[in-house]
Amino acid sequence: MGETNAKSVAVRPSKAIFAAAGSPYFSAVLALMGAVVILSNIGASKGVSIGPFITDGGFFLFPLAYILGDVISEVYGLKAARRSIYITFALAFFAVFAFWIMIQLPAAEFYDGQEALERTLGPIWQIVVASGLGFLVGQMANSWVLVRMKQRFGERGLIGRLISSSGVGEFLDTLIFCAIAAPVIGITDMPNFINYVVVGFVYKTAVEIIFVPITSLVIRWFKKREPSYVALLTAQ
Image (cartoon, rainbow, N blue to C red):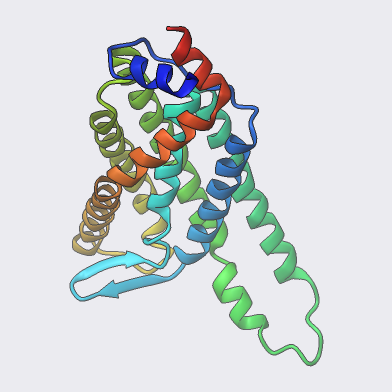
């Protein structure tokens, strides 16, 4: 009966509603977002060339962070989105500190990977600064646009706000990230820098657009299972 009522309410225009962020579902998405950002920062220390396209080793992971950000913004609202961004931002810098300690610890006589460890994880702090600032600005813009559109249109227009917010967020994120990270991975001339920015923005935005149907299904899954969301829908 409750599910039927929720469906009947969801099909007509309604005000923006958001679930409480204290549920296990929110915690799971937040943990996954933190893992994705840390792993993509490690991958981003490697410059990658695929045919004429220049990118980095974290290119296949980072769009997932924005998809998870969309889920949090749509289901839990701007306040929860900001909290998740701040926590993820802090976790990324904690990872850098942990990597620095690992590098500084004296290597055992039998260990022959110190140079490789320093080369791989040594530049991570610069990547994290680039990624962190880009992520902070891009995700904030992404969440703000998505939530403001939801406040205007209610439950309607989910696909439209997912695409619009992704475009704004990914552009700002990519521009800031590439401007700082490019010299770290060896990109020093303007043509390759422009290639790096354009490829990154187009790729990340395209991935999010391609995954919009799946993101929409995931969001609807969360909305149906968050008791506070269902209660608010039913109450309208």
